[in-house]
Image 1 (cartoon, one colour):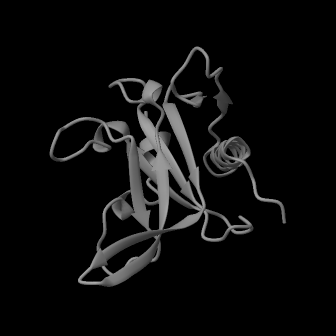
Image 2 (cartoon, rainbow, N blue to C red):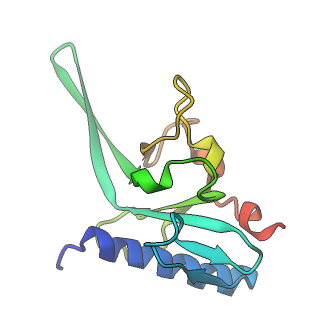
Length: 151
């Protein structure tokens, strides 16, 4: 199977989200032109959504001559998307396999929650651990569709 480019990966994520919102919640969303807007979709209830899509990758740390590796999804925002108020919600779609055959894990995160705890600045890059053991960051936002569906 041919490896998808970053832009085609984004199109897959946006298409999945548009279909899921319409099928499960009767919410219509539309793609907006990227040259004018920092967000990707706008819904019929006025929510501005950024859509981030990721496949599995590996994170590594070296401690005392031993290398530890674990699978993660890495999500990135563009500099244009970092200023406050550019979107209300960031929808992160994490596919468990490279071939993207199963439905992704959906993390619906309010934009203001994607800040660096130390500096208070918006995050440009963040990772979500795949199949964590115990409570880990961002998993509390999995399938929080109410953030999109409620007015």
